[in-house]
Length: 143
Image (cartoon, rainbow, N blue to C red):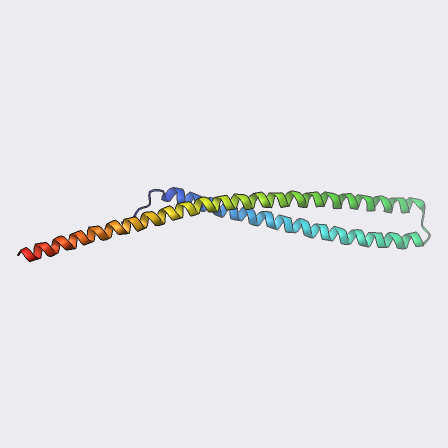
């Protein structure tokens, strides 16, 4: 019966690969959320700028115009922060992908080693069986 000596390590590498794959999925999800928030913020800023242009055409107090302008400035700063968050999330995704790639390579190395050992085991089993059959044939001819 074939028993791979490094089966526990192979199982550990499989687990590590699955964990890294989940991490890549989480990072991609967070990146997509951040990109969606950025789009929403851009749409909100565009609407606010349109409203501000309409307000400037009408009669409003300078305080209200100043408040609106400050709010727009605040929204632009939030947009910049969101863009920085997107950059960070992209870097986290790339790091997670690299980690996954490394984990996959480690697992594949052990898979290949297991396959080679199994092929060697099968060859030894065939040799043993052939020797048994040869001896059985020699024994039956002697009788």
